[in-house]
Image (cartoon, rainbow, N blue to C red; front, side):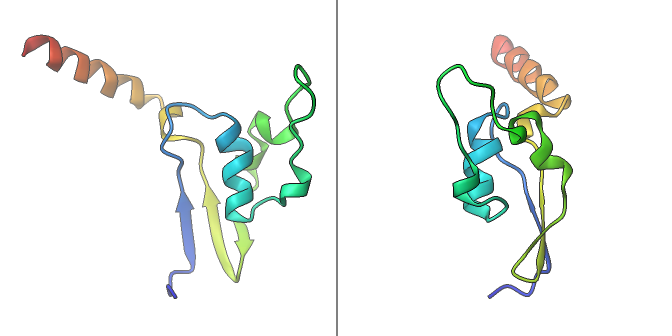
Length: 92
């Protein structure tokens, strides 16, 4: 068992979506599966889909604190990395 008290979870996705807002929080124990209801097709997403899940940090889980961040692809610098990679590929 780890002695680390704080954990930071950053999904490695290009954007946030159902996995970031619903599936991962359930797996981490941030929300209970019964609370997550995707509803009928065309219905508005649950409150977590509007980023609320990221605003309630830290989460207390098993006497530890878990910080849950938006997906790595939502960082403004991510686009710069893609452009740099495209430029490098074009020069080779």
